[in-house]
Length: 582
Ligand code: ARG
Image (cartoon, rainbow, N blue to C red):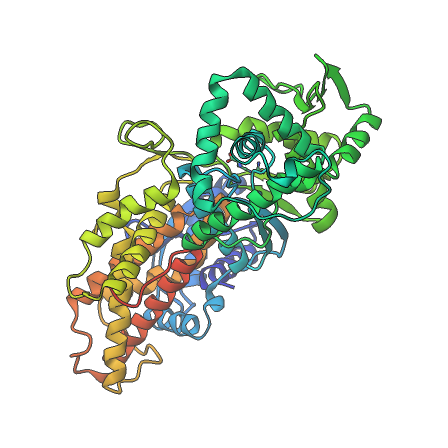
């Protein structure tokens, strides 16, 4: 358990023994550390309940706290706020226990089985900026949950059943009419795909333009999409092969972003179970026909906004986005029986997920206790405040976006790095860090503006600043090692600079818990910046390696190691790699 939580529990017991019933005590980080590093406001609450003077209650609590060596500088402010600080000895003890094992300072969560649906790339289409946020936020949430003890599975949930399937197959038929899969008596034998993944980057856009101008082609593409849904042997084989080719590219991009999925499943795998699911819904009397389509009502009495029914089968028998999502839940529950399913998807899809979740609960596909959570995110905008686009207004592909930032980081690269391969690799790692960190800074559902110049700046709240500082800590420790200086344990602290770092480390768990509870990484991005800045302040105020007091020098180095490890831990949770040098 974390040190702060332990203290909170102990104080709660003290208050309980004084005769007051109280569920939790909170040590709030004070914004006036000169008065006390933490504040306890519970006396005010108790005074109301017990109709007593808050100051009197506070005084009786303080009397008990005064006997505890972990605390110093205990005083009462205003009507009954208790200010309290942590004694240096205890602070150092906490730091050493954290060095021993970070989990000595972490509050684990009660273990749950969770599925996280993120990524959501679309087969045969290019990944765009919308997929960036899902990958970054989803991956970091997954790593965070895992760090806190959950059993969590990531599913990329590829978009592979939409109209793009029909469009691309139609284009293929037009370009390669002699492919055996188009034969009337094709029986599933293997064949070589006559295209490369590069070709895919223009086949879909060209097809998409063509169907927009030609109603007949559009209908044909729709029909092929439908045939794929119903298992047509030739089109299914072709689409399988195109999917595999496209997934290779998709994997490369996700790999570069450090997004790793346990499951590489898509919408299509639900086609086998959709009939069974629809049958079940039909038997429960939940489906009705509207304009020939099979729909289900998901309205609730308390709704104050319009809640349209979810369409599960179109009049021509085709399935929709809602059908595959509901069927995916149906299948996930059967296969994994999770406690929670999270969806990291663009805010603009909230209504869709509302409908799907309601349908899942109403039909009892999901038990009441199972939590389906929509973790929506805002968009990355251009300077005009609209979703970031290419110069001619088109969709910005993810690789292009990474390249834009990479140009900046390459320009700003340390001129001491001259090896061409090094330059390429390092600037790329920094670019990804710059993008990912900037993407995780705003609260999850807030929009933000794409600013490659700012993101790649070495100063300020940026990925490169964090990497640079972290690397500097590492090289300081390497120098100490070269000089055979030990740094295993913190024995002393000297000034407000080293102390501030320690207090930040003491708060690690509260921050991590907050990030988890709000499912937003901004808590972590703020914290790592604060900790790093606090360290850099300390670094510039003290000459660590030249310090003559050996005990102090060793303590400072051990503290440096603690900050380094904490930074690496947090960067890892954020899914950001740190290069060896930069
Ligand atoms: N493929 C979708 C898109 O690009 C995102 C998928 C989100 N996940 C889901 N289960 N529907 O918009």
